[in-house]
Length: 113
Image (tube, rainbow, N blue to C red):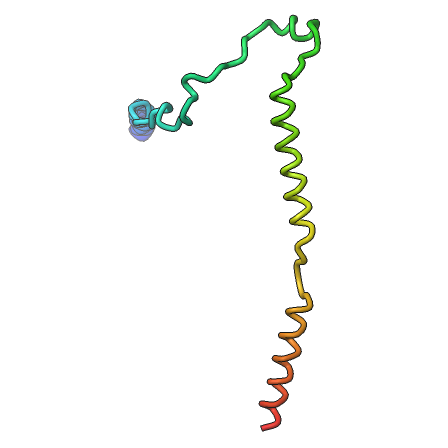
């Protein structure tokens, strides 16, 4: 009979310990979000919030000339970079083939000695 009472006490203490742990976790220090901001974020222009219904039934959004030019410039830069990366030969090439042949020749000479 005494064992059941002891088990209840253990469960009660375990539950209290869990509550204390949760309370302590709420006291943790978190880094300030503002410390990670990029310069100029506080002054940035944010889009205007509109109701979802207006977005679904309203006119199609259009980009400004400046935005289009910036995106096209970025995409052409990325295409040029991709073309340069595609032109890079990965793996054995003529320079490596010559070095391997020279090393094999030296190895043969060393084996001959």
